[in-house]
Image 1: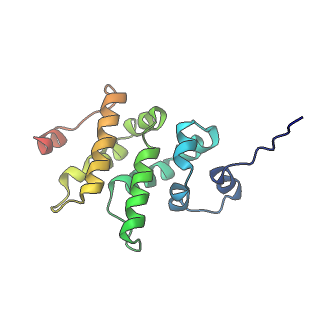
Image 2 (image 1 turned 60 degrees about the vertical axis):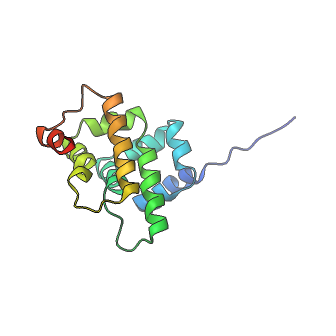
Length: 146
C-alpha cells in the first residue's frame, strides 16, 4: 500500500512561520499557484488590508529603492498575477484607495516603466471585466485615458 505524506508548500510554511514580509511572500515561487487554487489561508492573508495594499503597490508602483531591476520586475509580475483572481479583484474594487493606486500609473510622469504600465493595464482590464458594476471610475481617470 502506498502512503503519501503531504508536505506543506513553501507558502504554507511561510505562513506557519509568521515572521516574514509581504515582499518575501510575493517572492515565493509557488505563491501564484496557491492563489489560483484559492488556498483559503493564502487568500485570507492577502485580504488583510495592509497586505492587499502592499501587493497593489508592488504591482503598480515604482520599484523598491533597494531592489535590482530583475528582482523589482519579478516582484511586480508576481504581485500582478496574485491579484488576478476574482475574489481579490472584488476586494480591490470595493476600496477606492486601492482603485486609485491601480489607476495612478496613468498620471505618472514620462518616461513610464513599460513593464509596470503593462502590469497595471492588465490589472485594470481584469478589474473592469470582472467587477464592472463595482468599479467606480473617476471622471479624472477617464480624462487621463482620453
